[in-house]
Length: 330
Image (tube, rainbow, N blue to C red):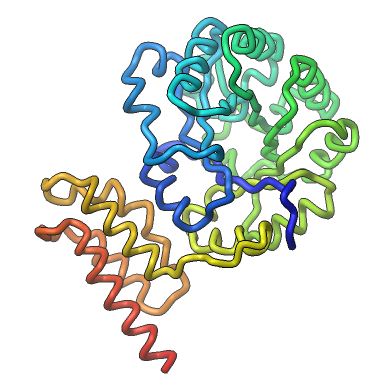
């Protein structure tokens, strides 16, 4: 399948999709949109901007997600993102956590759409950066029409792209983990949204376990693309199918090649402190999932071994599992 207009992305995930993770994912897929973890607008305005927005290399498919509800700080944060070289900022209107609610942003803003509108307009006044929105299909207080009304109001500001997690956010009674699984998926409602808004780009998120199923849902529900979150993190090699299946670029790196490039990255980016490499290694632990001796490979990577060349831990473990796999095939 070749569809240059179809969009595929890896979801923003707190404590997961940092710049090390994005480096790893970019090795596997060149055409996917990669998102940062959500960064609060206040943190960008008052905190360590360079550290929060650090990336390994700029491309036009890396997007910073921000969260907040103060229009002034949201505009300042978006301007900082723009000044650091990014060309798209995504607004988090979907996180259901209590901590985010306490800051009056995330999914609770679906019940306060005028605040979202104010934030968008202030960003537009200050910045040229593209603005997109990631949200749920509502909260427990909202019906289907409330969801449609939310998107309609936001789109009147000129926003053209919405990433929709096809579950409601239950703001009272469920924690973030439960909110990712318990509220039922409703892809049909997302499809109805698209049918009502042909001019909007609607990206499906939630419950997608493979590239094949994402393509199927996108086609069946007449959507513009799909986003995968946890599955892409836990089984990252599924991303090797993206560039060939969607964009007809059939030159993916092998697991072995990816692991060795990560080892080089560790050499360049880790200090000599014992186990300092784990901040990078933790992102690649799923690379050999489904392959023989993958558990042994993971165990070797998390061991506290003091190699003189920091990336050698990955090199030696990878050589061992590849030798075993190749002998088994032979």
